[in-house]
Amino acid sequence: MHTQFTAEELAFREEVRAFYKEAHTPELVERFSNPATMKDAIIEWQRKLYDQGWVAPNWPKEYGGTGWTDTQRFIFDSERSAAGARGVIPFGLSMVAPVIYTFGNEEQKARFLPRILKSEDWWCQGYSEPGAGSDLAALKTRAVRDGDDYIVNGAKIWTTYAQYADWIFCLVRTSTEGKRQEGISFLLIDMTTPGIKVNPIHSIDNHHSLNEVEFNDVRVPVANRIGEENKGWTYAKALLAHERTGIAGVADSKRNLANLKKRAAAEVNGGRSLLSDPLFQKRLSDVEIELMALEFTELRVLATVASGGAPGAESSMLKIKGTEIQQALQELNMDLAAYYQGVLPTDLNAEQLGHEFGSDARQSFMYGRAATIYGGSNEVQKNIIAKAVLGL
Ligand SMILES: Cc1cc2nc3c(=O)[nH]c(=O)nc-3n(C[C@H](O)[C@H](O)[C@H](O)COP(=O)(O)OP(=O)(O)OC[C@H]3O[C@@H](n4cnc5c(N)ncnc54)[C@H](O)[C@@H]3O)c2cc1C
Image 1 (cartoon, rainbow, N blue to C red):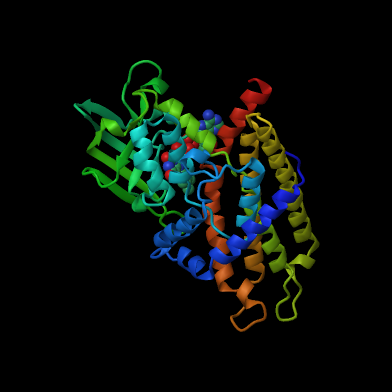
Image 2 (cartoon, rainbow, N blue to C red):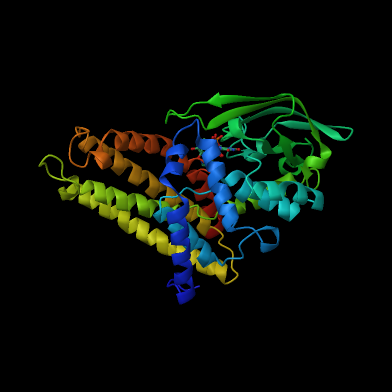
């Protein structure tokens, strides 16, 4: 892959652009931001992508994927972000589905994959536990065999959107012998099974996306186990590789930066714009330079993948830099909100700088603290780089 697009790729970009313009309506956006309508709106949006045949760009074509190149996927994501459109919820489409089509049996593929494609089932991820986060192999949720079932006991934590989920994919301990990694199995669990309790966790952004999920004598058919017993760690690691796509969030950061610049250039009631402040300009330029460098690094990694290579430790680098840039932009947005805090609804530019912007800036700043923790904390990514690059 070259870092310049071909004529076909540019034509593809136009097609994607037109789709987003038409399909991602302001009415949908309104419903995404209201907790009461969010779930239905997301499902509706994902069905539009499904009807277009674009809901699962990462899947092999035989299961419903698009057959796109990495460059097309990059364009698709960049256009999504430029349009301010939301991505799909990853747990079903990007996380568990690749595990099912790679390691599941034919019955599991036929049962789960079409429903994931059509967003008929909402999935959540049950990996982390109190006491097992970065050190995931320390997990203790037990699954004990009883005839054709496992009996599951334990608790998962930080389970995003468990309150909406029909299914949870879980790592459970099926053996305490030998190496810790060799006693883990991968189970698909129906959230309506008796014995499951979802306890909400309210985060500092004042939203409810996180949960604790308790399992008390939950019966799970052995038929819902992916692959072999005690081999779950292998499948879980493969899933983490699928999390890499778009991990740097370059497209979203570019859009945030453009919006930030536009807002900072606004003059309110005859006052100076924040953009005219040399100190603010310097901070903005520093982030912009880092972001450009990150974009080219991401394109280089995509080029490696397109020519058959594996991304290796670069994906850890992208994760660290990408999330640091996201947080730097969120901090600049907070400063912007503080600078323009006196804007009244009747003032010039009130729509882009008024109360609603301040409240959104605060919310993304608060939730954004988590970006350097989830998906493998940045400290742990640094350990991965040290091992792979420095051979430590
Ligand atoms: C918003 C959010 C959503 C999440 N959603 C989900 C979800 O849907 N499903 C799910 O299963 N999990 C989810 N998680 C959990 C996430 O994967 C864990 O928080 C993450 O793996 C870190 O684990 P921990 O919280 O137990 O922290 P710990 O592992 O206890 O780490 C605490 C601190 O110690 C540092 N540290 C740990 N080990 C090392 C080391 N070896 N070297 C250097 N520093 C180290 C870490 O970087 C961190 O700063 C979510 C987390 C967040 C914040």
